[in-house]
Image 1: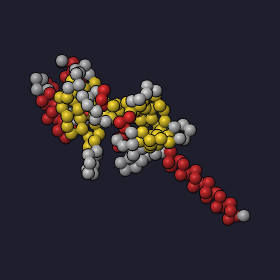
Image 2: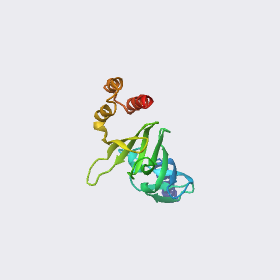
Image 3: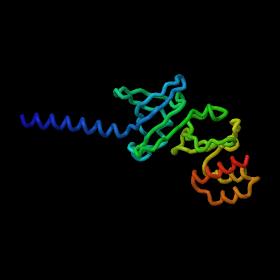
Image 4: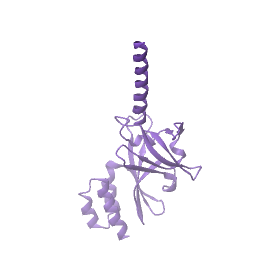
Length: 194
């Protein structure tokens, strides 16, 4: 009898702890499919860089496992999503949009870094075939979806310098810009001058 009790207790404990661990890998999500206007609330399985308990942008790059409030699971392709908002482990919101509404052609889901009256800046996550690492690209467009810059973030300062060529004050501030927030501030100033 004692052996049966220990065995039953072990199985129940293993089941309960495995469910808690699995649930920590899923984050709250709201999304809209391109084929619908309804907002769907669920949880999305996180694809972490080092741990599935910490949010990583790769979650939106591949087929996503969604879990509804009843525990039913389904798979959603990134190309089928019009809008998605994921709340991470720190309660921060990560929003992505279908690029077809903001760029001349479909590039997958993009993150909006800045949208102004005359200029916009978007971030794209890319997984090239046979590459070991995911790549981050940026798009700077005008208000007509014309791409002013497309490329990787390591070349960003040089491209901003070209865009700000008529504004020496912005070029001077550009020298000390290092973060996305710094670049967004510069884009706001540039946009106000247009």
